Length: 284
Ligand code: GLN
Image 1 (cartoon, rainbow, N blue to C red):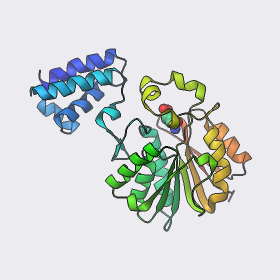
Image 2: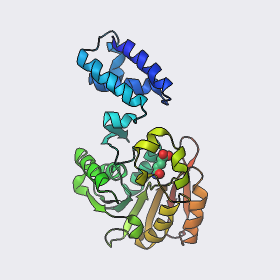
Image 3: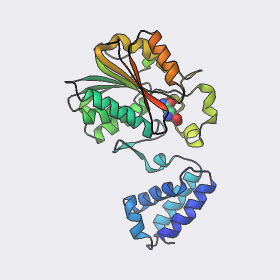
Image 4: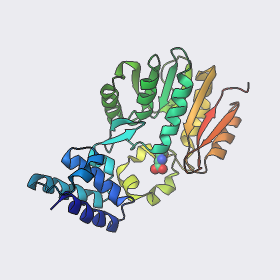
């Protein structure tokens, strides 16, 4: 079978299995099997697959058809241009979270030796790209899952920022690590209401860790905790930057205001969903 034929039949198989972007996923998997950039596939369309490649390909396509996430099959996800190792212990980084990362390094990059907390670091993607953009920053990366911290540490090593990140294991709702004042607290916490978990896409429901998704009965549990815990720990000039779920910007703004926070800025994602919130400890 040529690579072009392999792509064609796999695209049909994945489409029939209900995969969102069957052609694109098939291309990523084929590039993985051929160990070449995806852009090179067109030049290799007439090349036959070897027996070993065919066997690997068949296995990958059947696993993707079973709705195992593409990134789990590749072993990596790209976040802000950096390749991050991912597995079932961490949330696969999402494109909308890149907006939070950009806001974070845009702010922290203007400060001298900023101290930053990434609350619920998961794969470490936010902590790592911010550390990579702000070389004099010190980042604390907190997560309740030791397995997630293992992934985050490996990713920090991979991108040469491990020396700038302190990893802490613990439930952030019970307290923030250390006693320093932060310039920036950022978080993409679990925010899906518990009752909505069963209706998520198969890839998310069965393969992203529930720990990284479940935001409690109304999905706002972590925002409530952060509203209380982060305020006394921020410098007066600091910022709290959050990703929120669809429809959560208003309730989160309300609970921040109630907890005594000042000005709050809301930024939309590419789908025009208010997705990023930037709160200041006090009004100017
Ligand atoms: N953005 C993820 C999703 O919609 C949820 C991540 C989270 O809870 N922080 O699947």
